[in-house]
Image 1 (cartoon, rainbow over the protein chains, first blue to last red):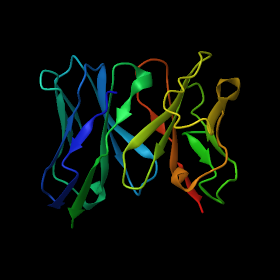
Image 2 (image 1 turned 90 degrees about the vertical axis):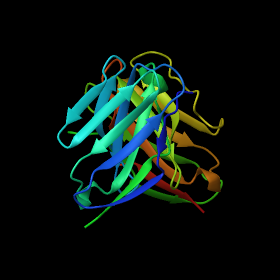
Image 3 (image 1 turned 120 degrees about the vertical axis):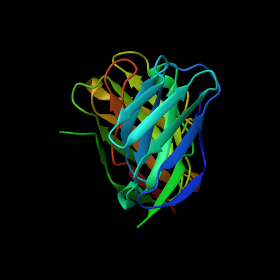
Image 4 (image 1 turned 45 degrees about the vertical axis):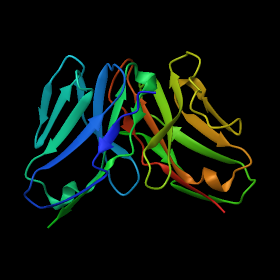
Length: 110
Length: 113
């Protein structure tokens, strides 16, 4: 199993602050993906970072990957109340063994 | 359609009954996945279809669970003799060939009484 594990389990911040979530995994990977889930239903893909990449940006999102430490971080800058959601990392060596962690529940207070 | 669709959105059934959950993937996507998410938990991989290859069923929790994908498109997840611990949100995702972004449907919330 290549399951990613997110940390912390829950994070509460004020609007405008930055939010940082971490993901650790145990074996070698091909890519790592971050997803967001609102209200316990469908997930929305945020960003994919490949094993040969170290950093990737998308709008207010910044993802880093450290394969030597088998960890990744997701930074959301200038958070908004609408960013309140659960965030999951998914790791895999091939596409059919993607595994998701339990997620980080982010609450952004207005 | 523009995205992955699933039906029904909610299903309430009695213990011991069979249920069928449907997933319509994005047109042209060759890969289709089923996941299960219990309350407050992460996603649990169930089964993966890729083109015409034999599906990866390694995540199915018991032989009461089965899935089909007809014509390389629509998929049906069947749970026989449902039990209360089957209650969860069942999510379907599809993606293009190879390591790629998975696009998730809205899920089916299954409640077994």
